[in-house]
Length: 72
Image (cartoon, rainbow, N blue to C red):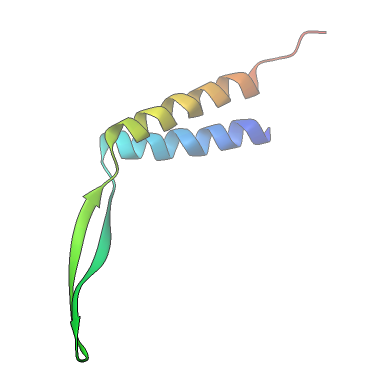
């Protein structure tokens, strides 16, 4: 299989997952640090849906262009 098609499949799968299921990550912030006492907050953030859509469209585009037969 061509490398362009493999990259396209991987990108389309990840983009589809983000688009349809969503993807979240946790970001830790240090809020206060006094005399050895440290307070932190964990924020849960999600990857925007448009990122998944762009990945899905780009992946399908790579699959199509990578699997197109060359004439000549």
